[in-house]
Image (cartoon, rainbow, N blue to C red; front, side):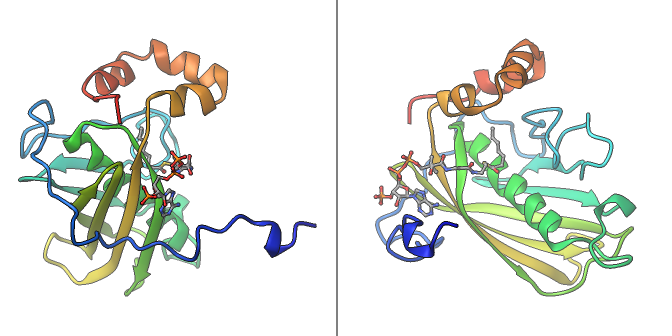
Length: 202
Ligand SMILES: CCCCCCCC(=O)SCCNC(=O)CCNC(=O)[C@H](O)C(C)(C)COP(=O)(O)OP(=O)(O)OC[C@H]1O[C@@H](n2cnc3c(N)ncnc32)[C@H](O)[C@@H]1OP(=O)(O)O
């Protein structure tokens, strides 16, 4: 069994809040305009893909600046306790919504750290409305935060989240993904279109 001492440490938990010298870059001109959908990055994605029977089917709309909104309805497939959404799946929704912000910067990135505060139970059948924004960028690090409200965009707060994304070269996906899925994705026109909008030189 691996002892805790063998697990490499980054020197304690690294913050999801930006340092004082972080900047807020301009939105990339190739990013979807405010009010336009940010398309799913992959049809088989559990959170935003259409090609997933039990998926969350998160729909994301670009907002002003470096912000977006997203929503999905909790189905019976998403239960943890009877009639209530599973917390891990709600965290997944925030991972994807916050990750979609990287499309506004048009640079591929992966989640380095993700924190979620659960403030109110989320029942099956309810719609969760997420608002997310970039709060700072330093080098390859993109700092983000989000709030999720129940029933409507100004409903009661159910969750808050913050995440740190690390920009990566596109090879992160092509070299690490299971080869047969990467090969299929290369043939997918929607994936190709979404990747063409990314600047792949972090
Ligand atoms: C196509 C888009 C899909 C979107 C889907 C939704 C998003 C996701 O779920 S992505 C999947 C989950 N995430 C992953 O699988 C990532 C796995 N991790 C990795 O691949 C690597 O650890 C990776 C790429 C994050 C960092 O590795 P590497 O590129 O070598 O960077 P590294 O040099 O270690 O670190 C760069 C900086 O980021 C910081 N950093 C890296 N990882 C973390 C972390 N986990 N937490 C906090 N800070 C971190 C480092 O401290 C360093 O900071 P500084 O520049 O100040 O020294």
